Length: 216
Image 1 (cartoon, rainbow, N blue to C red):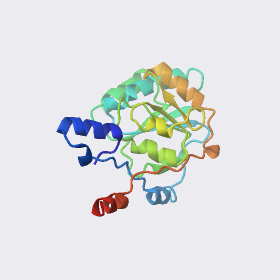
Image 2 (cartoon, helix red, strand yellow):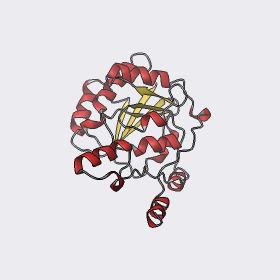
Image 3 (spheres, rainbow, N blue to C red):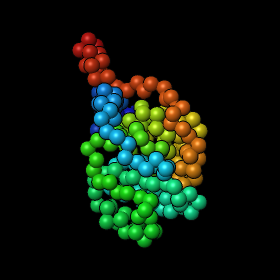
Image 4 (cartoon, one colour):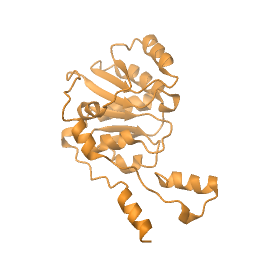
């Protein structure tokens, strides 16, 4: 079972599988869990700020160094911006903290560490951003899409082009550099999550998959 068409093609080639031996089952979206998780926690953001959230382990594949540098560019013209990065350390925390200190961004960026329930952050932020070099299937992007959060993302996975509609619910980063990232964040200032109404995401269905195999 592969999460995306790209992963299926890789599996077929790498393991020399027959076509019928590998199918695509997109990630499931647990809407009940998300709805429950945002129902009992309050908004802890400073609402006078433009609050940006990024989520994922502190690893170089996430492109956080570039994201941090983009915040340095942003605050030159808009100091009412704050970035929250949710994720446990996978080798980059010390480097990222030094970068934040060197760029004098301690007032504008918070490394939150691992957050058991990230959904209130997603639900209450002004923008969710993903600067990954590559992803298999970014669940956090899908979850924010479900919550109608304005989105900015690199083309790190096949699904990005199916979730982000430029100038409607977000923007796609064409070139991963700090200037391009900051430009897309600036464009996202004009997006209002209150008027975003994303189409329903039809993900995989494990029950349908099992029934299909049983009665094939």
